[in-house]
Length: 394
Ligand SMILES: [Zn+2]
Image (cartoon, rainbow, N blue to C red; front, side):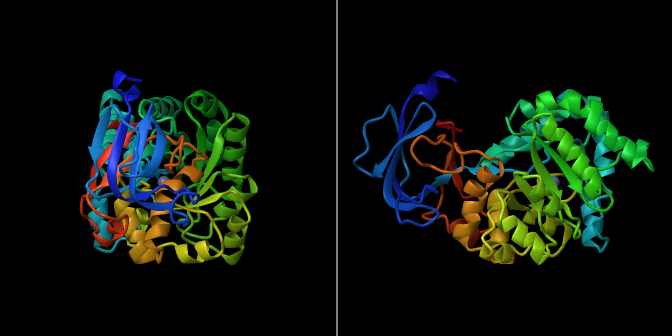
């Protein structure tokens, strides 16, 4: 920790403070309080109360009546890659369907790239996400698909986040065409053994054209035995069985959840598995959005994440995802903001981020707006004035 992190800081004149702590403020899930001040010290929230009553601090920020929120927790991103697929996007917008096959294009580019090139791309995207208010980001491997390339992807991801996810089972690489089970054996065996020390999570793309339920179960079970937490790319393009698998194995998150049966919704509602919705993917593939309203009404915990990747959702902006969730998925602004902060934290099984209760990590954003409502109300507008990461202005 640098010397400045030990200094205390008071943010005064917060017009609207979103804490995600229902015991604070208005009693809603967002725990909204008005005319507030926050003191942060040693990278943590040390005091919350009425503006003007805050204890003295070494430094001060005047929020001038603006809103303050917990930093966004992006629980699903693929940032380790080379190249882009703008031409594929243009073709899709001209009418070609999304099949997931373009992943191999990125695999080829990633394998050819130097460590420094991959590292520079991750740093660029991490900085971009931070400017859009993301203070915690999960980063997956999955564009290497050899032991060496998966391990170096995870090492590079680990330089910018502790939330690293081994996604060796993203697709079957071309050299294993027609031998998917052999590739699954590699992923579950020596590749996992090499990757596990560099990962917190394991993930699998359970979908036609990628891995079926039995293959996905083998990958997840092996990952769990290696000490990794479980996440699943589930039911994005079809009723893949991924959601049921995620729930049956106690995965932290089932991601996408675009095609769900009533049985899937029921299973999620009765579980600790978060449904992580990624509306950037539906936007960028011009596909029907997941039915967030149906999940919320059933009592499912919903997270919103970017799915940032060069093929199907090349955005790091959670404000954009919030706007899509409100406009296209019938989430209320309050639900969408909660899902992009506290929901993301639940999907990563983190209790220190995604809220601004006492003792929380001092990851917060100050908007150029009087209310969190503006995140959906003013889409496409850069509303993030200041980001505090671990108590330090960035
Ligand atoms: Zn993904």
